[in-house]
Image (cartoon, chains in turn cyan, purple):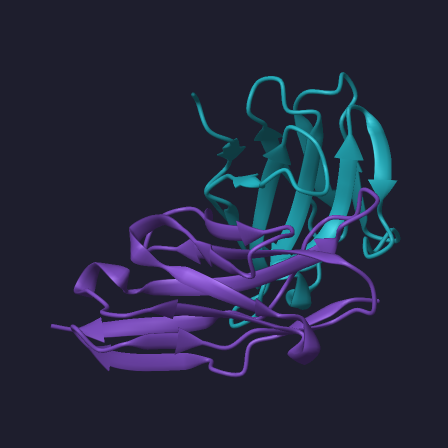
Length: 114
Length: 114
């Protein structure tokens, strides 16, 4: 079984620039998550999709972050404009359902904002 | 809102020592509980999970965890650690009903010295 694919692995940008991350979940997984992991902290949920609908985006800073999952498969997370505090690892995860279904994580994208 | 506390941020043990990592959560209802592990250079992966029934659950690689409802705790244990257990360990929780995503603790970095 192929795992969750994320790209790029690393990205360095200057503040006020924009950046986009891509995620392809495990085939057949209906639920897709984006988490932000700041150094020394645990992953924090940004947005949860079920198929192509949003289940929870209550912690997404909507003035600068956006995410979409148009065809219910892969997803893109965008930051525009970036701030220094956005430096983090952005993790994508997928699961076959919700609740008890375990999450399968990608390797993440490490973003550095200078 | 639910939250998860992991009080041990960094633990250093010698091989063959016993391990116990603390995890406490705050939520008044019924929960699903998980431990995830991230080995150096790898993605987060599921170590074990608890939904209901026997409060002592066993996971991969000799790990186990005990759910104590009265203490809102789900501590991770291993009788004898190996150098290969060096990793970061995350406790996570979500409501057992509904579609809420996992809330993660801040993680415990375990370093096992040979």
